Image (cartoon, rainbow, N blue to C red; front, side, top):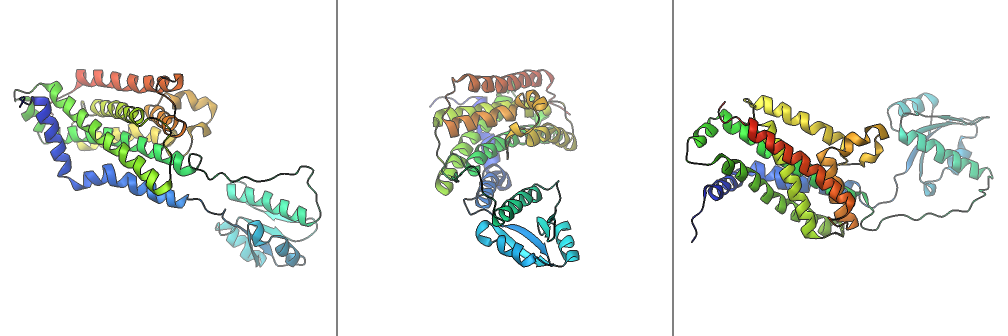
Length: 347
């Protein structure tokens, strides 16, 4: 049997350390699964929620209540004016209709549900009054796999977990070892430093492969998600993302001497990507002025690449995919080079 080198032993030690910490296994594998299941159930295919509308008790209230039937998607309650105002203020109803000439709608324009309720109620009442639409329309509900929210969500959760695992699994772990004087002891052994740091990053890449398989299997079994791209290509993107964020974690940990310091730095690095990089909703919703900054973030590149591959079947050689890969390589390569230059072994 071939003699195992320091790199192999260090990576095996890292894997055993991981396995012996159940809480770490939960955050790496269990938490993303629970989050995907919970959000998948919350946004499962179901009939639209009914719009809660309050009608003030006055002459004409009965006619309005009859016009806003449950079949049209309304839940109507007839209330005294003060009670209606209280419920609207507390968010228990989306709109208050006050009978009269003219008809009065009371709603909060800063609440999307109120604005939508105002339009839906007005449309229903105008139709009941005899309005005829000039254009005939029909509805087609989009519920097939690949076009649902859960299909959009799972690649985002996968990207989020790769980012969190790289920063916390590498950056935090290194500073923890530094504060416990373990790095100082290791550097005194006949160990090449690049073997140690390489083993940290390689073990992270191995975990990512398992995460990809687990999340895609979960999406397929529970939600019928269709994976259109090559599994090898998806795994390669995930491993590249792991390298990118492990390198950033390495850079963040290169000089930090205290747990509090590295925790703050990791949160500082992660916060913009949590907000802007399209984990739970598309990053395209942000203003055009911010788009160059958003597209340059490594998590945006990873999420967009994973979604393009999983949902659209995009090949790695596609120009858009190559651009995203280039962004991740640039972040990972530059972070790794700077980390190797600035890394402090002793506190």
